[in-house]
Image 1 (tube, rainbow, N blue to C red):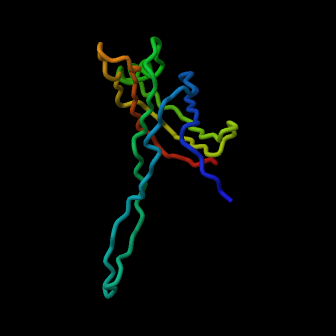
Image 2: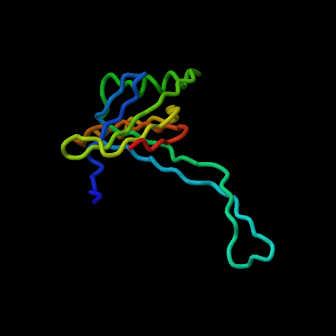
Image 3: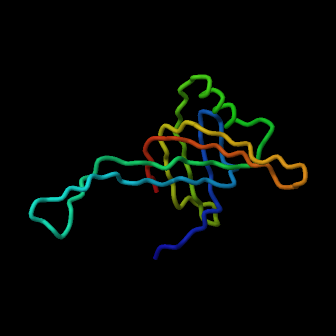
Length: 141
């Protein structure tokens, strides 16, 4: 029998920039099949669907802003013209920290960074968000 797991226990690893875990959220682990709809002559009940490729959502990583931010350095390097695309591994774990779901995301590269809201009247943690484009998402486990 399958058990359900919360999305609150996870790690993120982007090895080349020495980045591991400590994210408050990861979103955008989604994919959509793009297709052409063809009306077949004489078939008036249902069209034919021909797959033509996959479209992936941009992934957004969020965490508290730190003084030394590898995500920011990576974004700045890409902004300067360096093509720095790295694989990323996202692992969801159960309460015993045993992996129950693993995704490998190929060729990630940052395209947007947001350092959050700076508000002198607030005591909330400043959150850095980085948006990544990428290639294929491989469901490993």
